Amino acid sequence: MADQRSLSFAKDIRPMFTDTDVDHMQSAGLDLSSRDEVAKSADAIYQTVSEGSMPPPGSGETWTVEMCDRFKRWKDQGCPP
Ligand code: HEM
Image: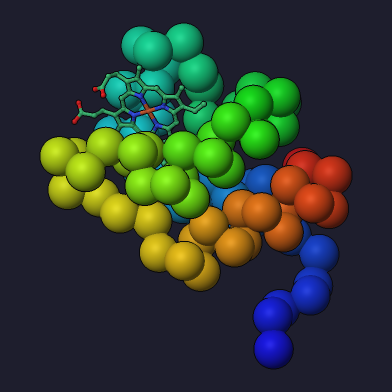
């Protein structure tokens, strides 16, 4: 059964972004270390990680179904800090 506990950006979401993710996306104009920025773009971010276009396949990183589900649950909970 899915884990229904309340999620937080600091504890559950931020650790899923690597230094590489944060560095590269900062140069692309999106600060993945900031709860407010991630919350603002949460739908677009969920779209890219669930379709597998981000992190880019060539980067050597992949998000599992569990990671995508956790992000979606956090988004559905209103992106708590
Ligand atoms: C709205 C969501 C996002 C948009 C529009 C976006 C867009 C981009 C763009 C334009 C680039 C530069 C071109 C490229 O190297 O492919 C890039 C690179 C990258 N992005 Fe994203 N991105 C998003 C979310 C994410 C997320 C959520 C992650 C990590 C979980 C991520 C990880 C990366 C990485 C690691 C690179 C560097 C790839 C490399 O050079 O090997 N991005 N992204």
